[in-house]
Image 1 (cartoon, helix red, strand yellow):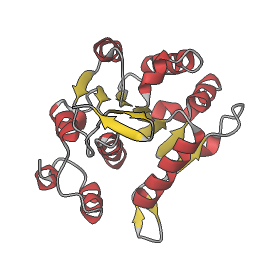
Image 2 (cartoon, helix red, strand yellow):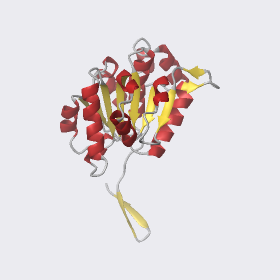
Image 3 (cartoon, helix red, strand yellow):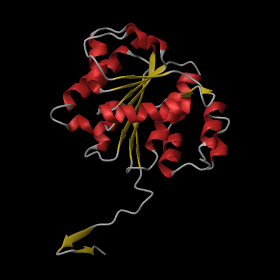
Length: 228
């Protein structure tokens, strides 16, 4: 799908940024997500390979929500390093004074788990770890009621023995707290995607396209023998 076809469906500011980023055509997973109701605030579980375009799916959801004044976005990532990486990327694209791109305010909150961080009320897109958002929920951060979109990166970690229970509780609590919540789950590998999509009350979007072909082989005695 050519990006131009979305010009009237996404905020013009997002369209112009994507054009500036040399994006002229959407990838298969992105097209499937749009057809599944991404821009109509449908809950989606995106299960596609690494580098297939999952982040842009999330961006289309939260930028539309924020710029249309539907509500804030909480973007949950499992690791502090990954949260920082996403924060820098989104600051460059959407909260960059030097590039004259100040569409909304982006915050990173991965620190002290015993604070309500009231300053976050002034921000629109919040990058957090599961442990941090869990703390904010338990401390009844008042601005949480303004959240509309929740992005859960690496959602397959629900199956992780250590971090899975916390993530499950977070999702359950936010579904109870926010009646109009828009959930986007992202993962490259999910063992039970249909069951997880059903639990999230989400449409399942699957695709096997990847930008670089995945090949398998066996390394032995200094040589790699590739599978046919």
